[in-house]
Image (tube, rainbow, N blue to C red; front, side, top):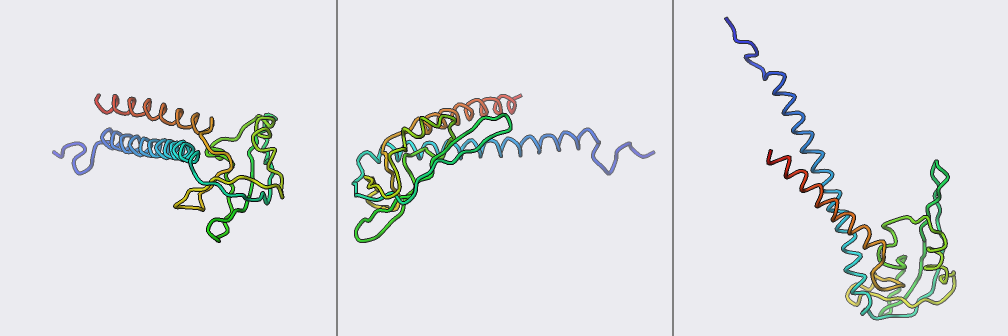
Length: 172
């Protein structure tokens, strides 16, 4: 008499393996996304701190606008788009960073964004802070931004929560 299920894995075992694999895959993707998010925010904070001591040159704003985006609930979000030109050691560069962290979040406060960027009209001179070893890395407003702090805190907090949840599930 042949044993039941001989020659193939029982259905329950296949389901456990599939769920385990999918759980591992999902955990890996979420973990990598959180690590990437934290990495970008920490990079912005690090360069924000360092940019306060960078050398400066005079540049000129080439273009400046505030981009808006609406959602289905009638709420608008905004971000700034600025392009400026500057020269270091006879080499011309263009930059688009007003402050470190500006591209991390959209804001729903048009007035707040305008207060940070409103003085950068096309054709106006701008003081450009640049990295001495990598002059293509530049910023108009040195220092750390609230956006970078928020994203770093959120990413690190979610990583802590996620890691503790995964580890507690793994132990059991």
